[in-house]
Length: 131
Image (cartoon, rainbow, N blue to C red):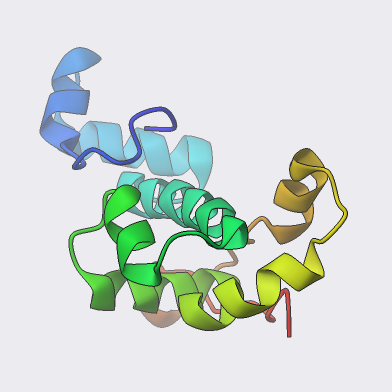
């Protein structure tokens, strides 16, 4: 999933590849990583989206599709939940916030932080990184 983040998630195919049922793979994945395969994939997509938005040469819509999301609304909602600000605000503010930092350091300080929430077991929106 880390390498193929832009591809659609197919838990059934992943499960077949490791000789498990989809349900068992999902349970084992959650036990190992603390989140569902879908949430893990969305976090990787948002991390990549953050890097593309920091570059500043792509629109939010272009970034959405580049990272494998098919719905701009879902992408924006998940981005805001994980990062704390909408992608358009992040794009506007990110370049100034990471100016002069090496790319590896910029990635580290802007990495989304998934926290546990009571609501549907999904991540709670953390404090904005760039506010």
